[in-house]
Image (cartoon, rainbow, N blue to C red; front, top):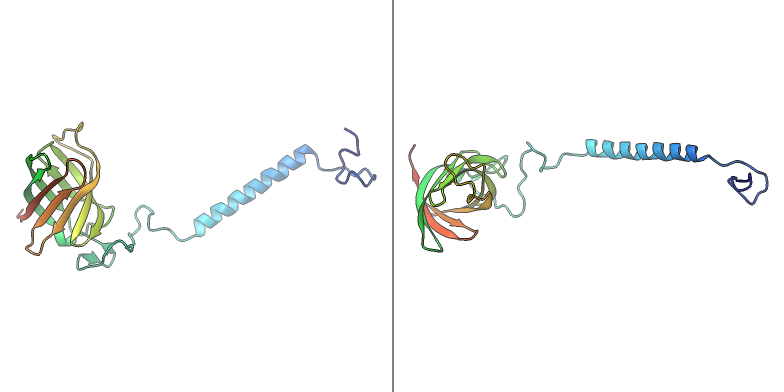
Length: 186
């Protein structure tokens, strides 16, 4: 390559040399490192989101405040305790439903257990959504004598606290089921 082809301003005829390929690689590497460092600082210094594990959940517009809501966020306190009842699925099969909800259970927190005799499934529950008096739970971490081939983890277990103090139950997945549970003593 001629001196003219390697100059910064090929038309000036003075033959000034430009930066070598190695210099441009070094400059590019330093620029990339600086940009990465700036992004890391911005992320590190920005306020933490409510979705950060261990952070207090922030109520959203889709969550209705009510007597079941604590200062730290929505809870399922209005249905805390042990419940037992029966449900019938859309195929006409009747089965037992047990629910235990710990006091202070908030959105996306493990808060108790649920079992259905039909499959059978015994799993942990976490509060998926709350529109008091309706609470939707996610069931997972099946244990005991659960039929792990038939038990499917996920949301869709809805409970509605009635004015009479009972829980209307509804599953939102196929086959859908409905029933009523009553509070039981320890």
